[in-house]
Image (cartoon, rainbow, N blue to C red; front, side, top):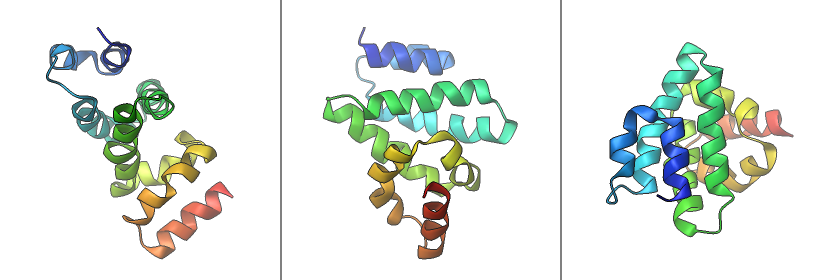
Length: 122
């Protein structure tokens, strides 16, 4: 089993069977991880949030394009879609990652929202 699959199962053990399926892609994993992240923010489950953001960060640091691209377009970009995740970004997404994903966020946020986020990072 690939490392990314093992790490995904650690994050969302309830999705083990789906994540072990060879037809499941890392994009599918992030499709499950995003709503789980929103839910964890709503309940204040920092333990799960640490796992979720660590998985996204790990994927974004890999050489395999499928992994870093999936983290960007299936997770980080969509953090702007939910008030809970947007407000929490400076706490959970480090500055260098923010700089890398800012262009993706720019497509989803108003100029005012982006300026507010920039001010929290800089």
